[in-house]
Length: 61
Image 1: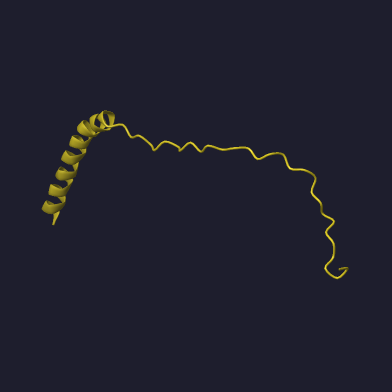
Image 2: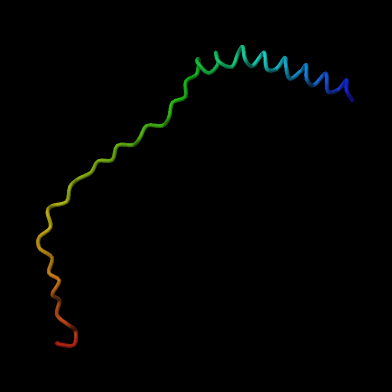
């Protein structure tokens, strides 16, 4: 059992050293580009006139 743990520890150490050596170079070589924000063409609405809130009642008919 101890022999297996020792082998696993050596493998993890070797993998860590390899990753420490190569991963930064890979990250520098391939920058991540985020998607661009789409441009939305907006048009302004014309100014609104006064709002008529006095509506006739249906019962006054």
